[in-house]
Image 1 (spheres, rainbow, N blue to C red):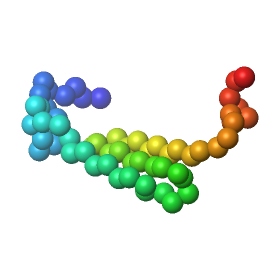
Image 2 (image 1 turned 90 degrees about the vertical axis):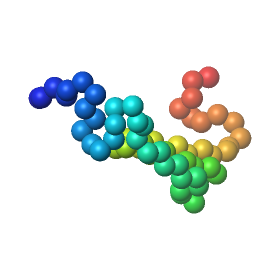
Image 3 (image 1 turned 30 degrees about the horizontal axis):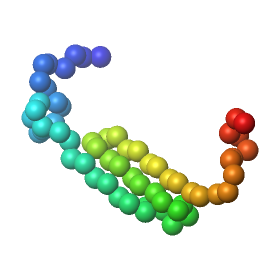
Length: 60
C-alpha cells in the first residue's frame, strides 16, 4: 500500500478542512428516536426505544 504524502487528503479538500457533515433525525419510523450521522465515508446509525425494566441480555 502506498503511503500518503504529508497533507494529501486524496480529494479536493485541503489538509486543514473537515469533511462535510450530514445529520438526519428520525430516519426510521420503527424507533422512538433515531439519528444517522455521516462524515465522508463514515456513517453512524443510532436508534433508541423505551421499555419498562431491563433487557434480557443486560447483566443483573
